Length: 243
Image (cartoon, rainbow, N blue to C red; front, side, top):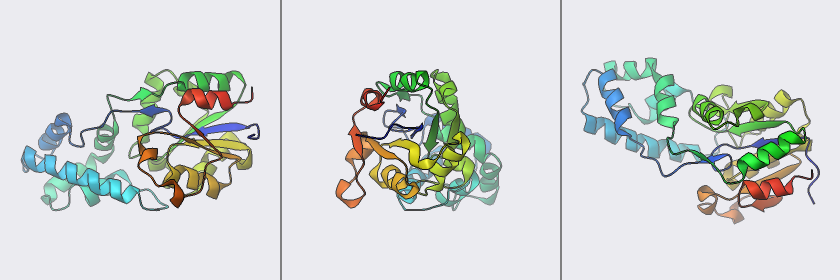
């Protein structure tokens, strides 16, 4: 039996929303980069750089890195290495908008049961916050607003905006400070043993809840701390709420 929460903290990807598998080099982004850099690289070169960069950045994200990289540093380190200096500078100057475009998914959709769980928590007066690693939190924030649930959150904490990333417990502490509640009274809900459950244990939340997703299936649960409860979707989370 979980202790009743004083606040609910939720990851974005795999918990609030999920998207279909994404092309790391969408044609519209390739074209934008081609125009932005004055055609000094071919579309094929840009395409290959984005694909390789996405893979390298994904590998870096799976390390236990406490600090987040800034937008310009992500592009410099993982995508534009070896590009002509003029092209690198054009990307650096426009890194924030490019990061938004690289993050945004047209196929994002709220996970089943999430609207119901969020509205049940809201009806019970339970404050909520998003706590998410991401290249661009602005894209997540805009999606949640578009989906009609952004206004349900009292705070949204994104790694690119606060400069740290899960499993650094500071991510969760940012949220609990913003909500004005003790961390040990909060539930944290994530879809990754490696990032979310470890983060919740380090932060000493009242409960660490795992919501299964594609990412969950790719992890070895024996290698990480166990969650207090595992649910399949938002309906499972709603049914845990003691209200």
